[in-house]
Amino acid sequence: MDKQKTMQEMQAEVDQYISQFKEGYFSPLAMLARLSEELGELAREVNHYYGEKPKKATEEANTIDNELADMLFVIICFANSLGIDLQKSHDQVMHKFATRDKDRWTKLED
Image (cartoon, rainbow, N blue to C red):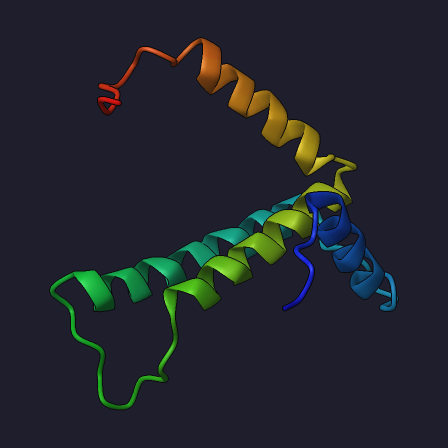
């Protein structure tokens, strides 16, 4: 079984991959466009699996996990290009949910 990667390791892996190309990271606007494109592809897959729109016989088989991974790659590229530490950002948002939003939803009974 492969060792699970930390967010820092994933960000470093993506940076190492992108750093081998002269073009480097896309601009923030281009990155946002790519993220929107990937979100559309994810929405299409979700609609095929859980919605009322069946896949055409000519469409490639794809999976929700592949589309989520594509989005994660673009998000990591976006963060790297702006010098954002996603682990730190994740910790901050979880703190916000644990404090500000702690009583927002009905908790499961123990």
